[in-house]
Length: 107
Image (cartoon, rainbow, N blue to C red; front, side):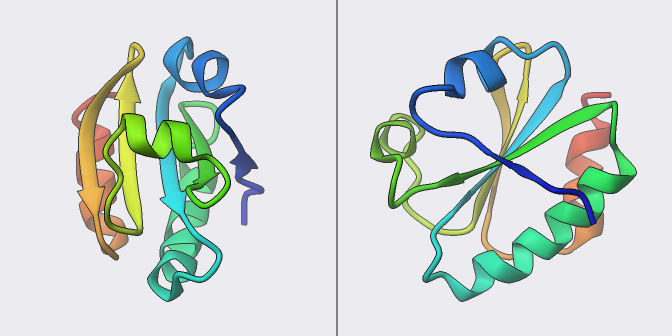
């Protein structure tokens, strides 16, 4: 499974908003059970879309600025960014097929 890179308040701009590729950000917290299951799904997707999609995870407990900026109130939440703009918000544990359907719209 792919090693999904952590991002934070400091590098979010460079890694996500200025990214050339479609970018997925998995907003999670270490105490969140469904987040752990979602991380497994996101890892598989990261493998399958390597080179086409950049995949990151952001710990909302440690990065309140970005979590608040994007109104993350439920976990897990996955945002799909294209050209620095959030295009899709996926809230809650979702099957791989639903996430892929949303990714494919922008590739």
